[in-house]
Length: 185
Image (cartoon, rainbow, N blue to C red; front, top):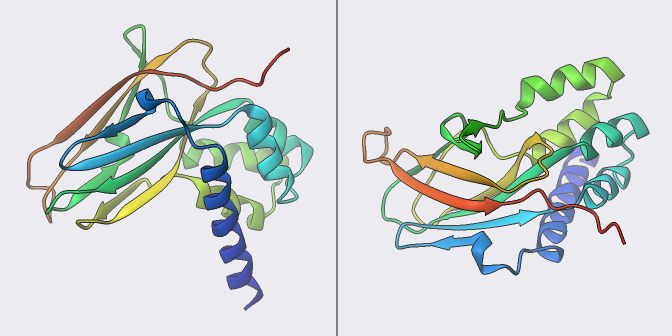
């Protein structure tokens, strides 16, 4: 029961955290008849505070603050299945792919600092599912970590459609996405 309550607290806190810092820039929202996307960028200090509040070690928080988290809220507005498969998503800067820091990457980082399993699970819950389907009118959100970027980049989201991914590919391209930085003033 204690684990269930902890999970619920993390989820509620994450939802609150997302909404407190929701992007107000209309360029970070995309909508058409099939999909609604909202990008939420958090500064390194906001990421650090989130994980410090969950009693992550200083080493873990330092590692987390060195990355950029492209947080996306997705709502399937279509009458068909929309598939999330983040391996099909591209982050591009000056014609070069930016490598996603996937769960394998983070597990290696956590192994190096002996991060507790409870903290690994908490971190994993904040990530975008690697692959899953969205039913019509269903939504999901999560973070995709990438190395910190100092310049804007493009995100290309490819969504297979159909119950068995047999439908057309839905592609959305968002230019000028940035890794939000802490105010240096």
